[in-house]
Image (cartoon, rainbow, N blue to C red; front, side, top):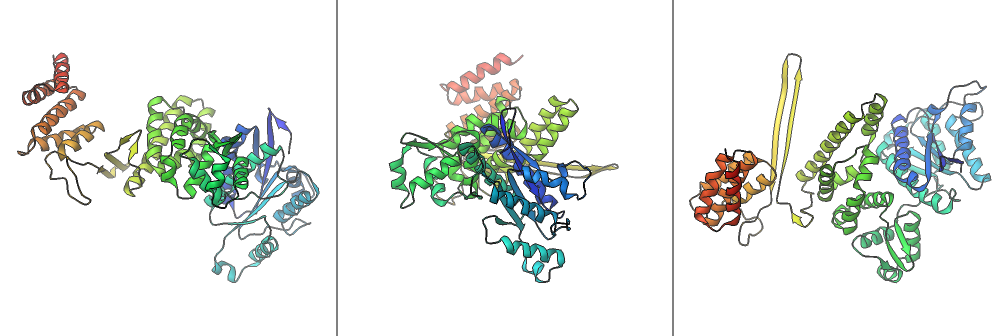
Length: 504
């Protein structure tokens, strides 16, 4: 390991690759930066990504001589290859190979050893049937190390970034626990037994080692617990075990649960709900550079409890645009303006993710003990050119989950029930969709077979809409009519007094 810098232990991550993997290379760099910001620094470690583009130009007999010192200083080596092998350096077939040979020599000779991984882009059979010379060298090199623990493949830059992020996060915990780079390269993915234990602990109070061993059904409890503890996901005090509620552990647990398609279990768990409430401001500030007002925090919290897609974006989504905006705003002294833009960007993206889940029927149904009975997702899209409007599109998609009085069977149509428009109107009012609410109350009041109490509710709530719109004169006669039908209705009495006090 390198020395310390401002009390943080510096871990240098060297990214090696030829020139045809620019997108994957950038994904790797972003992964290092995310782990540095969200995991490493909270554990006293600073990850420092280094590549050839970071190395200043200088004079040397061979260009590679300017790069090799950074390979010699690296604690972590990440190699990425696609179809290009690179050009000879005078000592090796390419710069990537010379860097790899150098890091391997260090791994054989040094203690603690550098952490080494090589990632190859997965190619189709057609791409490899008649390879040109550069690709032939890549395939030969791939064959050379394919049976080692260093070898991995990736389908896309996004997948590569996710894999590097997970491995580096796990490595940070090992560095913290051992105060050195692991002696054996490679970080195992979370096991099925460990994932099952995480799932069990989501809804449980601290449990004993004996209970864990009994519930693993033949899995080795000690190995599972050691794995989770090394990753920082579980805290053990005496004989009691529980999930860690640190920010980095919370994000790692969420990532594992999403990848295992256990998002519903995660979002419904007490651990997730409690930790999200406690950690959300910190997460949003570190990931999106956005300081949340209490009202904004509450909206995001509820969206992240209801929508798996919204939760995944808030906790694990790409933050590059937010990093760029924050950096640019600070450079020109416009931080207040940037805060407003950061929130608008974040709110828009999270709303879109929530809308995606509505369409796919993936949203959960309740939050904070209340059932969500209606949503209204609206889009307004407009474009223009110099001569005028190019196009515009407006769409509003309501989703209603309402039961009228009595038992309603699956698939039964309820829209013809007399009190159905009253229920829908009330939901629209509570969502501040006042025009739609008034329309539904009018529809209910126009029905001859509507019950007396349902009519009173429609009159009272229609009056409430006018109160909220500050049209007090329109509200007064509605409350009076409601009281004529139910003279002892306390809510209608209170609303009438309020409306009359505000009427000129």
